[in-house]
Image (cartoon, rainbow, N blue to C red):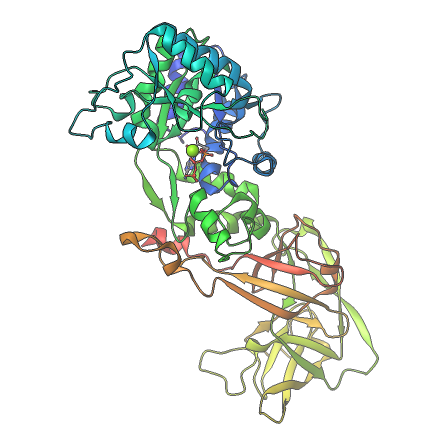
Length: 560
Ligand code: ATP
Ligand code: MG
């Protein structure tokens, strides 16, 4: 959805781009997605990916670059680079040949820094970091000039070259732009361009011991790549004058335009790498790809299809104002997708054995079940039926409540795709727990109705006892009990949902699920949508993750 129903651009950014194209400002639109490889991508990044790559797709021959903003050697790791690439691809986007690393521009950036020095627009400052901070001033007070601000060009060049040569210790000197310590915009008060760090970089190794700052690197990287529209989140709006200052003061090959949009905030979770890292490090989740995490790898493992994420990003749109998006909308988009394509199967999560006493011992038969009753083209399958089956414990009540229409003593129900059964006897163990039901079936009710026209009120799912497979099933709920987990300065972990994961370890599933593969989606009838866990499943012992329940709360929210 790149356009509104009337055919106009879907958002203010697409409107700007359409206008730029219409007046011939650019022949080709170039956008970029610039992750820092210091963590896994999350659903917030998906919004930015869908926006940048989406715009490129809609404006052929446009393109979108994947650029790693890898200027901080201490926090970055190759592992993250690989996972980020995998996530972008999984979301359905392709950067083609346009894979870049800011670290590839280190030499060019250094050159530009020397040019600023030569123009008298940058200087080496010997103040320690806390002094630089202390003399920066506040929103109401101007900053103070550094005592090193008036160094000569020659001295600055000499010192900067020696910084590069490794003559000075970490933190002893920085290179700063010489702009205006009294500027109303704090980002223009002589920002730091380079710092000394004797640290190996994941790509450039030990080639450099000075590293450029993000604010200096970003506009130059954009310009070097010919980016036309540099789309970023609102917190960078205050940095735009500095972004433009670099473009105006350096002989860069292009003049990209920075445009800010509101970041995605999502209820009942957090979208910040730092906070997600905290959840991982403190062991509140099993890792970055824990299916409860809002990371791309987590939601992929949970069984959210990429189409659902793209659909969600379309639905939330792109605006200038921050807001909190209802997580029910995301879940709704997931259900919509899964409802279309998930194969219907039967799985019993809390099994209760049923012995059908009038079904011949040693006999079994194959019954026909639909893979998707609303989509006959998805075909049908055979499922085994015999004297012993499992039903869901919840589908039986010894003393049925008023509106309970399923199995109870003396009552008859329909088994999905099989026969009517009637409960004759309840078997309990010494502690009084129900361990088995004795039922009789009516052989004339195959196909769902009785020849004498008698009705049953309930239809329940089941699996054959002998031929069903054993499986572990993991049910997930929201990670936090509060929509804004940190509201009022609360510690993140104080509203963790203790019931966000329920592990059911002796579930029984119809035999076909032994062949389930990663990437397939199933609806366990009456239970929800499930997928095979790619990590913890073992041969003969599959693990299934519940992607979503069947109950959609979004329609209700929307209607209220
Ligand atoms: P975090 O706040 O999680 O640490 P970040 O902004 O530091 O994220 P980057 O790797 O720098 O992470 O982000 C890459 C791109 O994704 C940036 O352009 C950033 O603006 C965008 N982005 C990050 N978080 C969100 C979000 N919640 N919604 C939309 N875009 C986002
Ligand atoms: Mg960032």
